[in-house]
View 1 (cartoon, helix red, strand yellow):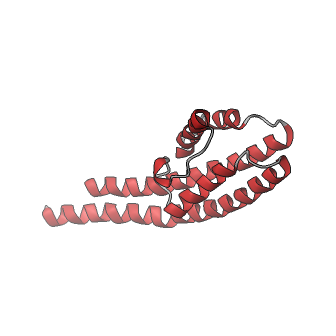
View 2 (cartoon, helix red, strand yellow):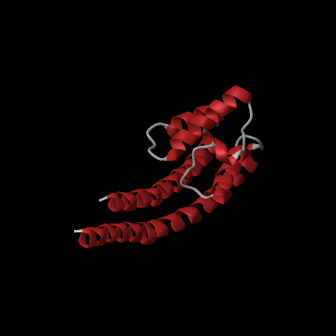
View 3 (cartoon, helix red, strand yellow):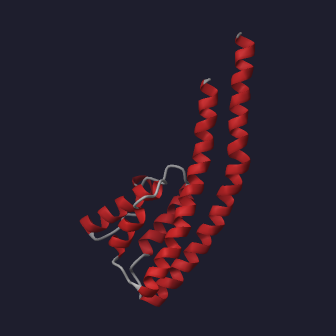
Length: 154
């Protein structure tokens, strides 16, 4: 029974990583559109985007906005931010993206957001593949392990 829960937790980790990258791709698309037409303040855009999101991006954007409002800067300390399902290099990539927002003229910012969006799409594709392959594999493996233990013990 416990091994099945472990399998579910591992599978959900892969699912959450996919959700994070889906939200990041959506964020880049919407932010680029906003930069082109409305030019909403960065903190307001992040706050409105985070509403209704279910991934860890919601927490990250809320923390990001709070940090900007308190200090006017953004800390790139990888361990400080809530991105538990990402590897260190993936966290650094996301934090570098957030750190670069609002620091250049509009044309350069749009180009930066487009490039970042392309990288996040690549990461999303990889995360979806891993979720299908590894997530399901670990779930099945732990369920079978649980059944095998019940047969051996019983």
